[in-house]
Length: 295
Image (tube, rainbow, N blue to C red; front, side, top):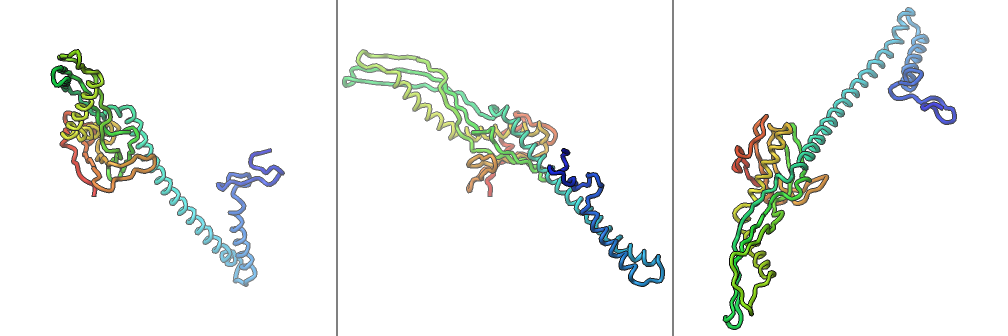
């Protein structure tokens, strides 16, 4: 049994392109045969001066029909080509966005800003109406990390016509805050009044929160956003988007299909990159990023 025949031995199936055994599909040839037969019959029935005039009269409608058919086929081919080019352009844009996303997966850690600081904690206790006193001086080393959360799932949109790359990310926030080391400088303990480890940890935790609030107040989150902007701009320049403007758009939630913009005070970081070269961190201070609010 052949692939282009029915199971019960029916007639072969013809493809729309006319690749069957009989050449052109019968449904395309049939209208021309009917029109030509009708015109010939009318030409023979109507009295003419000569046989040549009758044949010419019969061929004129057929030629007109062929001309109309060829014109329609060409118009359809041009329309199909235009649609195919548009689909190809959208596919290339999607592939470019996917390429940027895959490259960013390998360096998302580079967008995190880390700060290591040192603080001293003084802890005092007293009992028995001040007769028993204890104090301790401790130093701890903390590490604070801030950046754009879920950076590996950032949404990229490449606008080739406007020469822009839109990057939808979440607002910067504190990602991690930990204590790396605790040292005891001095301690005086009494028999009836001692400092427990839990008290030391509680005091360090309180000072750690105060240090975090102080760093955020002095623009630590803004520095983290600028660092992410610089790294992503360099990455895009290395991928061939050096002449594109990189626009960062802050969103409330990242989705695989669409990103929702903030209704108010949405922050855009717009950085014009130099064409053909990736900017260096030393040559791209944070003042290059123009911070503006979305209208």
